[in-house]
Amino acid sequence: MKLLVTGGAGFIGSAVVRLAIARGHCVVNLDALTYAACLENVAEAAASPNYVFERADIRDRAALDVVFSKHKPDAVMHLAAESHVDRSIDGPGDFIETNITGTYNMLEAARMYWVGQGKPEAFRFHHISTDEVFGSLPSDPAVKFTEDTPYDPRSPYSASKASSDHLVRAWHETYGLPVVLTNCSNNYGPYHFPEKLIPVVILNALAGNNLPIYGKGDNIRDWLFVEDHADALLLVLEKGKLGRSYNIGGENERTNLELVKTLCSILDAKRPKDIGSYADQITFVTDRPGHDARYAIDPTRIRTELGWSPSVTVEEGLERTVEWYLANEAWWKPLQDRHGVGVRLGTGKKV
Ligand code: NAD
Image 1: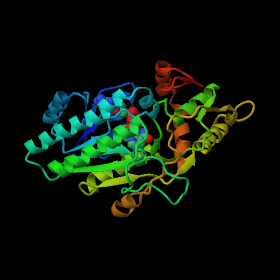
Image 2: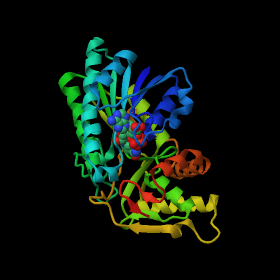
Image 3: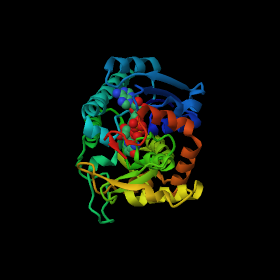
Image 4: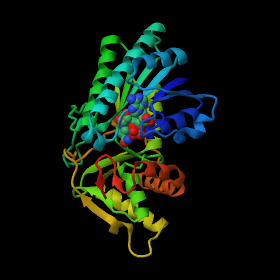
């Protein structure tokens, strides 16, 4: 298949590009190269004759039409987005423009192309989204997000992603565009931009800086290794039912404090400090406004309908992630230098 992947220079998009190329697909990577992008994430894939890069902005409809007519993709995997919740609180405008208007532009460009091609049955528009659209869960472990959970987004980021999900469903119902949607829990793994919690903790720990945790650290997130997410995304693209959405998650709920302590103990074993533990550097900082208490995914549909399950446990995945950051300073150091060391990016909080 020839896949048009948007946001393929970002964290999850680049994992999709690497896996798709490894599986013999052709990939057109469309990315505007914002601050969150890094083409080194796809350096190996880019050496393949099956890979093409197009620098384009999804806010620019005309540019999208050019890419569709030039490359004639068999399917679209739409990941390009502004993705950082803290940044959406500081400046929501970019989130509205990219996540909502940009998705509208992608849908219209894809629809015009699909109609122009004679509405091929096999064409797919796969919209990649987040579990944050469902809002915040109570602490009862029996309650999880299913595909039928009502939308209740509470941050500018999640509201913009919820809007984009609604647009995608509307384009399916109204125009018959062949779409599939996925809503995934928090991802982690190699090439995670150093403003996100897990890399911030690893890199601040190594640098001897504080390890910032919002509030009391009791917010619960459901963690999935990014390569397992990429695998699930390709499966849904190929086997998912039209017009249907699939929740993707690893059933790995952890409080933020538990997660940070696990990372500290992995680091304690791999890079012991002279005295004490990295956990001594944990510092509690003022909570994020509107901070959702708990996210948890019920992945029954993707497991039973499509036979997907994650390949690594969260313990294995975190271990691999720490090892990757220890071995890849040449990747993260320049990004850190460009964006500020020891600062929780997006909030400007000194940590
Ligand atoms: P990311 O911020 O790492 O990457 C986003 C990519 O999109 C970057 O390469 C950036 O340059 C590109 N981009 C941004 N604005 C653009 C524009 N206007 N035009 C073209 N390209 C643009 O994000 P990520 O964490 O890889 O997330 C990818 C997708 O997955 C997003 O849609 C996000 O909502 C969704 N998602 C993320 C997570 C997570 O835990 N990170 C979980 C579930 C779903």
